[in-house]
Structures are given as C-alpha cells and as structure tokens.
Image (cartoon, rainbow, N blue to C red; front, top):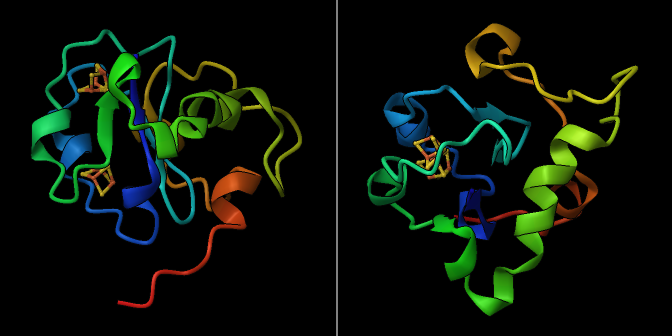
Length: 113
Ligand code: F3S
Ligand code: F3S
C-alpha cells in the first residue's frame, strides 16, 4: 500500500484524490488517509502531491514511519463522533469528508503557515 504521512496535515491539497483509480483516499478532518486494503499500489497519487506526503510503504521516511499503521487505524478504529469503524467502504466519494482524525493526526501541532 501507499501511505499519506505528516506533510498532508493541515494542507489537504487533494490532488491525490483526483488521480486514484480506485477512490481509496479518504478525507478525515486535518489529513487524508489511504485505505491499505483498497489501494492497488498503482502509485499515481505519489508524484502529484505538492508537499511530498505520499510514499510507498517500504519508502516512508523513518521519522514518519508511524503513519503507515496510522493510515490503517483510520479504518479499523471508531473515529470520534462515529458509532463504528469505517472498515472497508469501497470508495471515498460516497462517504465524503469524515470530519474526524486518528489521535496521531488530531494531536499533531497545528501548522502555522
Ligand atoms: Fe494531502 Fe498531498 Fe493528497 S497534501 S490531500 S496527500 S495531494
Ligand atoms: Fe490510489 Fe495511490 Fe493506491 S492512486 S491505488 S492510493 S497508490
């Protein structure tokens, strides 16, 4: 799978969403998350992110390695305000903006610029 790491937080450029052929990039509140089971590893999203937030799972920089499990956690844990985990919706467009994040992203310091 591919992973969205720290640079996406508070940027949410969304160019990646346009590129994904299987619509597996979901929007939380302050970041987007790639569904690890729905991603088909096409890699189309990676070069279009203007802040280089997207990496193949084996290439995630060490400092951001926690984001690999965190992208998965977005789908397996019950998000604040939800009644059940998202699980595998099979498409981000139909679920829309979730408006909630994993605790890793929610507790990340706000980007000032
Ligand atoms: Fe985020 Fe980059 Fe996509 S900033 S929304 S990962 S294009
Ligand atoms: Fe989509 Fe990127 Fe995976 S374009 S299929 S999330 S590699």
